[in-house]
Length: 141
Image 1: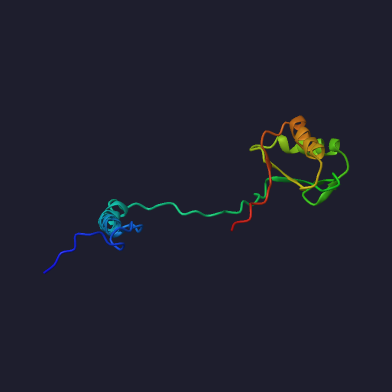
Image 2: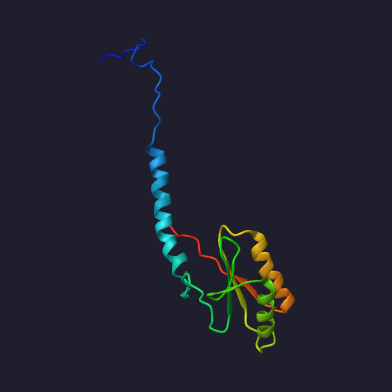
């Protein structure tokens, strides 16, 4: 029975690997804790959560739709309006109604701001109190 007291080259090498056994033990304990606590958190109180939905808003028949095309032309529903003064006269007839209908403005993407601004100003001159802008919803996905 002999014992080696001297140093050998194999034993003096530095171990450069990490011992992962404690890490695995800690991860297993955390996994067990999460598996136990998550069902309690999710199902402790029964509630009906709201669902997300994107509703397309359509104009009511009594609402007025004024459209501006790319060249600045003004349309009352589908009929072309020659001047903003003519638009103001039509809007004045609508402004006295009770309840007053909304004016929905559909402006072309490439239309000048000035042409849309003239419609807003015409609504203001006629006494229209509710103006809305119609846009397209963003593409999802």
